[in-house]
Amino acid sequence: MQQKPALEIAARDLYDRDYVLWVEQTLMDLQAGNFQNLDLENLIDEIEGMVRAEKNALKSNLIPNPT
Image 1 (cartoon, rainbow, N blue to C red):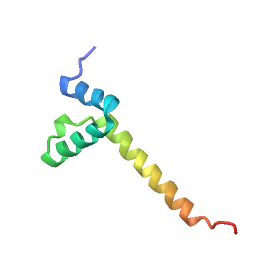
Image 2: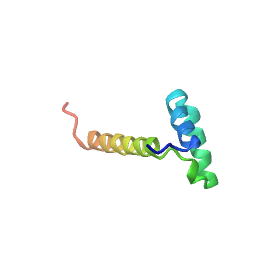
Image 3: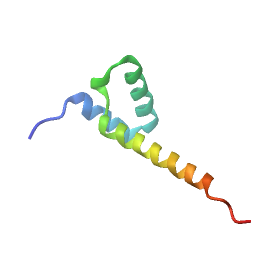
Image 4: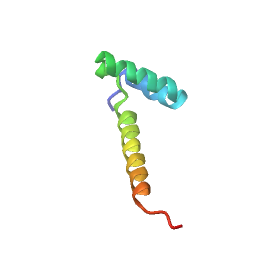
């Protein structure tokens, strides 16, 4: 079985331990172009969740409220 690089393991561990710090670190890595340091699995999950939330908010705003 192939070992994951230490940086990837550390980023995933950070996601589970301190979400806000993980977001800040991810933002800094993106801004600096340090794409090799990104926790892609959790980043993709977070972006997918944001898309779902935005779609749900849009749908709820388009459905008329019964009054």
